[in-house]
Amino acid sequence: MYNKIHLFGVLIFSFSMLNCQTNTKSEEPKITYNVSKTDKEWREELSPEEYEILRNKGTERPHTGIYNMHFEDGVYVCKACGQPLFKSNNKFMSNCGWPSYESAIPGAITYKKDTSLGMIRTEILCSNCGGHQGHVFDDGPTSTGKRYCVNSASINFINNKNE
Ligand SMILES: [Zn+2]
Image 1 (cartoon, rainbow, N blue to C red):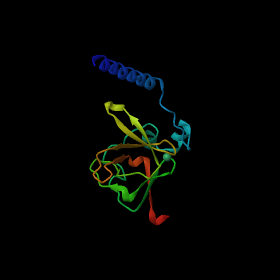
Image 2 (cartoon, helix red, strand yellow):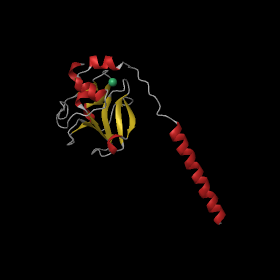
Image 3 (cartoon, rainbow, N blue to C red):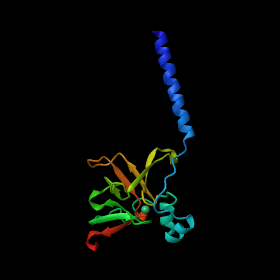
Image 4 (tube, helix red, strand yellow):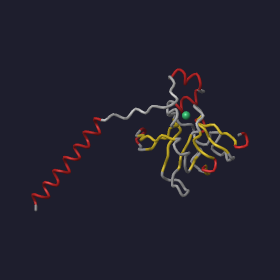
């Protein structure tokens, strides 16, 4: 009996070692985006603040963005490439200081593990150009339980009436 348990332990140990090896060997998969521009091109197209957020993964100061308390009918698109990301009926009033959504338009967002600043978070990027949008958290107050926390500077609002 002891031998069996011992063998089982060795097996588990070996598997975890294997996992470690594959983890260290495999590098982060390189994602390619439909819209791909050079750093110089992005700098020319975007304002310094937009560039800092969209390309450099910066964060605007809370309660300063133009869409934080913005509630109109329409769609929020990526400021860098124009891809629709969030619908106004999925936006909710959040006290966090940034535009917050309970869900994104299907396929519009790429999710990436972010371990910067000593935290484990899920970064959200535009799936069309890789522009940094913010992070998604599991503390949303609505039925989805999600809070897509987005920078105003990385999105544009398009009113439904203008379509
Ligand atoms: Zn984009």
